[in-house]
Length: 320
Image 1 (cartoon, rainbow, N blue to C red):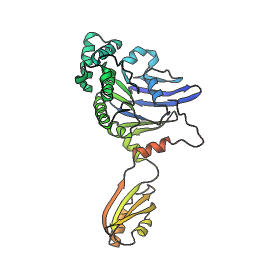
Image 2: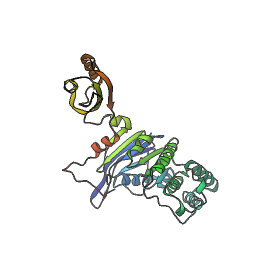
Image 3: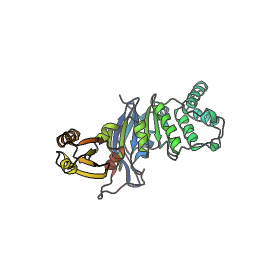
Image 4: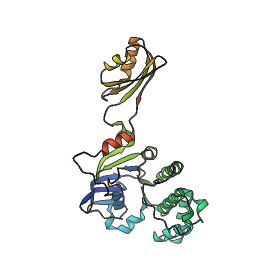
């Protein structure tokens, strides 16, 4: 049985449907990226999973139990870091975490051990006795993560956890999330696509309130439409014309010549790997082959293809 099950969930605001019949499951031990453009419905979906919002229709379940059947028990199993990370900045870190443990209903022993583990996991020992308003954005995010895990949740929901951080802070938080994912199930929303490739094993893509992709990151990227590209650099004559005649080739674009060589980018229809054909024609014409490789498609290309708004369909921008 899946840890998290979202079944045909919908939510509308002022007549605008922000989430429209979304369904997916998340198993234990997965780190799942949740992507979509602004207004696609990511945050609304996460707020329904964490019970900050009730769905208009559909059901969210934790191990087969609907959230509304026992909401208190469900909340004990979920950790949540919202996008705006609402901290009490006038409190010391130590007092804030103790306060959050009390709100979670932890007894003294469980609160003490839970806080110790959270502080160690998030690396905030050096700021433990400092006021939150004196902390950098990176350490504030770490404190937010600490409060989200101190009760040892089964499911950790993170909404834009690296938003507003500098590159070094992003790397630190990304590494921390990967470590947390080794022991917990993580659902991660982010606009930073490199974080998905470095952190997540699976990807969910939502667009205009509907789920448009679900699968392993590498598998989804491998199926980006529009053909593939092969980069070639050879020394010889008649290169461009010969390459255009190969089977499966859509177009050949010449690159500026250098050192007497000819460079070219071959765009294929994706039905055949042209690299053996290029090698064969190079041997046939007596070319010297300096470079031959296929460019991998990017997560950015996948994201753009899946979330492009059709001209005849309005976007639900603003209903997030």
